[in-house]
Length: 464
Image 1 (cartoon, rainbow, N blue to C red):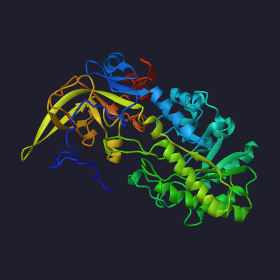
Image 2: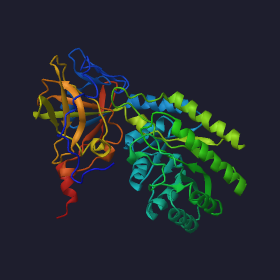
Image 3: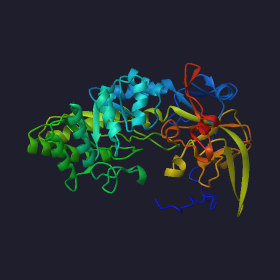
Image 4: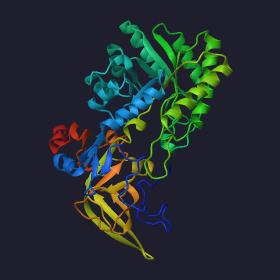
């Protein structure tokens, strides 16, 4: 992506032909996008898991991230059943707090963490360390030491420096680390450049193309302190088909066969990573988890048969696919500003009380979202709108283009769907805006799982 240092210029052009026409019903909740517990009550108000959004706003204020607990649990169960016999790792980077870590454990999933902070949350939640995997391209000595001390089940090795560092720590502590080697397989998924992570020119893993993967595997195999479980790959994020996985699995199985030939060992695990997509807007059609599981198993089985090796234990890492659809962010409208662009064109800017500090994905990835007026149903004609935040930043856009009722006004509540992943987890204090609370809802009840930051929280870190 090439961008001006000052950020994108959003107000230049209103499309002559919008990407999509106004929906017939602005109040409709597309089932593929919204949590399973989303509905409209008799007054036209959005309810989530049986709780009216007015009650949530009155109790918890806005901006507010709302997680449908049952939606998350049902998706976790779907993955556990579809991948029965494999290991399903929830990717904590999508969103992690103690409550979510407990949900993951209770549904029988594993958990991957990529920093000492995420590891600390998992441990504070009582998560079994043997069911944890530690990722990251620059793990510190302190992070590796803690992982060894608590007995993290898998450490994913990302560089030769890290491999040497971990080997030395194991020797010092008198322990053995169970490791996977992260492989860069040269597959560029059909996704955004910044989240396609298996092509050669990027920071993660050991390349197959230049011999780095072979060297790392040999180093691990010959270590007295490392037990090499298998290999790991991750080809990108927000992927809607398995074509990229097919190429990746082919190359990874060829690597396993080469390891068996060179070192007379058959590695027991193959982690194909995650990256499976979700629906953010109408027209997004993610594959069903059972179809994904069946396809991946078939691909790996076929490739292993061709290579003449045993089928390894499979691991996958859905993060967004579990938590993304379960999340909805509520905002209060502060200002509505129609902007005349000439030639009869108008763009309506709807400003809300959050923005880039709680959802940076629109600015960072040019991501698309769906939103609705949540506190009421309107019969007003639709206007093409842009939902923007309150920050002093031209790129502070939450939803680039959306049809909203023409009578949208200050005080209305907007609900943005599919914000469970990579929104609150990537939040910042830009402009010294406190980060929002996260509330879990189930069976008509709500519970704060991450409290709202306050100005006192911000000032507490400023030692003057």
